[in-house]
Length: 95
Image: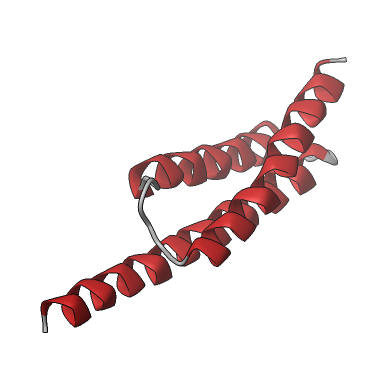
């Protein structure tokens, strides 16, 4: 039963990431985003996956951890892109 609840949690987290990624992509700005927050989430997913391996409990839940880790990685890449775009806008405005 605990595995089912963990899966539901991971699926619900996973459902929110595509919306966040689309928003990051379209906004073209890093304003209002926190790289530290996303890095903490990324680290949490890595440790969640590691715990499954260390306990020898490789179940289907690892798939959801991995998908969410990929979503967070995508959003971090978009954050870095958007940060560069923000800096380019500032530089252009200063000229």
